[in-house]
Image (cartoon, rainbow, N blue to C red; front, top):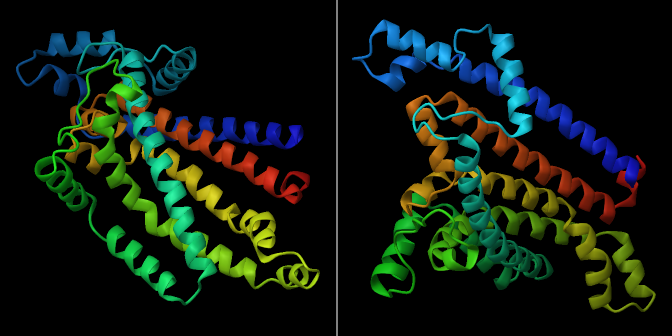
Length: 314
């Protein structure tokens, strides 16, 4: 198991290195002059040149990349072009907000989706199966902004249970932010609900048709024991990967939901960085997002190996 984890960690580091090259290259070739965008049209050539020298924009690209990567590893992510503040605490605050939303979404969505998928699989082709399949697909088919507006209208304006505006001040703890997190988490849950439900259902149906299930029942093992000890263990393995990837996606992929609810997460800040062509901020946000995906996949690989010993021995 230790060797397997070590291999996955090395693979993760190589992936991050290659990704850093891609991120740096792509951001360097975005259209427009950074100095002109930040300082405005009224800035003179001397001001523009001084700005480029201050932020190392005139250095050769290999030098810029080496400097940026070494500083990033040390936690020195530079100064934002647009806000003129340190990037590290800025990104960490937004990352904390996104992780709070992702954690609550996973807490609500994953058990619900897995439960519905298991019930649908165990009751294949029944009314329960049809109702769950049609219901989940109908809900997930709605655009995210439509779902958000419906939730705001119902739970915030009519019932008054939760705030319509999910904006939270810096330094807010999870429990302080919880009332503002409920509606965005509900909207985010619906995004992947049908996919996890269908994947779980397919896994359960496939496992129930395998010979070992029939063999176990003929040996006198109760169907409940077979389902909980064997069927679900094997059926949920693909779901583990999807759940892990979903967590990484929740960190920066909820741009629409964050805008609908005015929630200060990584996604909204990434849009801000692109709009202002704030390269250091955009690079930091992208690397944090990639790191979240990579760590989520590493966690999924470890869980996968624990559930299936054949993987870690391969």
